[in-house]
Length: 192
Image 1 (cartoon, rainbow, N blue to C red):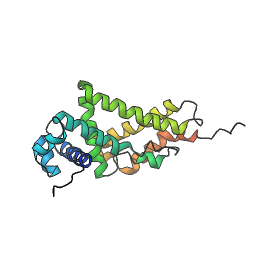
Image 2: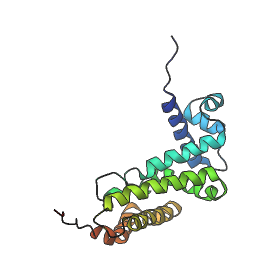
Image 3: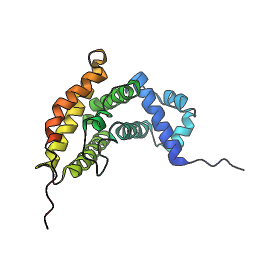
Image 4: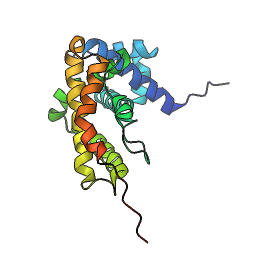
């Protein structure tokens, strides 16, 4: 009897392996053989799931986007510092994801496919955070953009200078930057 393979699960496993390979070797240094080895598959198997290396790299970027910021835009929860801090590079796993995230920043301006993934991701997160602020902040999209910019700035510094940016410092600065935005949370009275 043939083995049943969940194609979406296999694609995601390969994308996860690509994240690991990029974190270890950098975006320009990663090879399909590295990704295949880390995924425990052959390069031929990768070709079965992805049209080319760029498609694997795009899937890795999507995987990192999902991992890094999934908590920030959870619906029906006003943002709070603890929740948002989960997107920061406060541990080895998050630092690895941020290394990959930043590797793509340099390449995205020169690749329409990668730039589109970035734009879509930022739009989805901003929309989710803004929806949580509807009715309680005068400019929900501007507030959401400010929160995302704070995370991007702190995450970049902490990834590039991890010894200077331990978790406590990252969270303290995040608190300082976004507390004024979050403190404006005062639900509007319901109108009859």
